[in-house]
Amino acid sequence: QQQVKQSPQSLIVQKGGISIINCAYENTAFDYFPWYQQFPGKGPALLIAIRPDVSEKKEGRFTISFNKSAKQFSLHIMDSQPGDSATYFCAATGNAGNMLTFGGGTRLMVKP
Amino acid sequence: DAMVIQNPRYQVTQFGKPVTLSCSQTLNHNVMYWYQQKSSQAPKLLFHYYDKDFNNEADTPDNFQSRRPNTSFCFLDIRSPGLGDAAMYLCATSRELATYNEQFFGPGTRLTVL
Image (cartoon, rainbow over all chains, first blue to last red; front, side):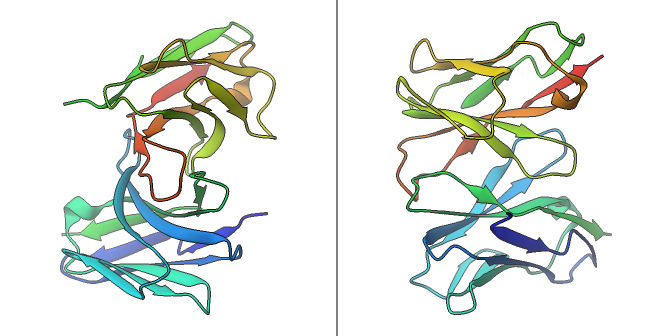
């Protein structure tokens, strides 16, 4: 059973546009929600993460919005650039320690 | 500076021929993880070490084994690779097992099984 559902599977955005990726989770024990960025042939790298005691976290062009009651969180990429083209994974972890439960991934393509 | 190093980057093996993948880290982290990532899928945790303590995920096949001879190195052994084991294998580390500890991933080893 997939505990973190991610959508869309793929996304095409024009340069300068806003990319939005959504995730929903089921396990209320999750209490840390990182986003990973993965370029082809590379390992995932932590992009930004949020704890459930805040509703939003912003780092540069990247923002996480978190809705605890709805058990949903999303990644917004403002002013999307071709260099942002990658696969993005949301993840969650909680009282089982540091074991990441990944969403299915979103392949983002930003067109010039 | 490289922090999590995986060797080789590409490995080709024959069906049933044992293969070993290597991971080393310069972060002095206590925890090392091995993930399997198939094409267009999320990484799937196989097992992890906290120091010398080995923890196997319940659904990891017996065909997959691991060794951690010291803090810096960890190996993934696939005893009899099948065609279904072709994937990217990712090594990751974290300082501790507690939540909020970032996992640092290596670049991966892409395994091809002929």
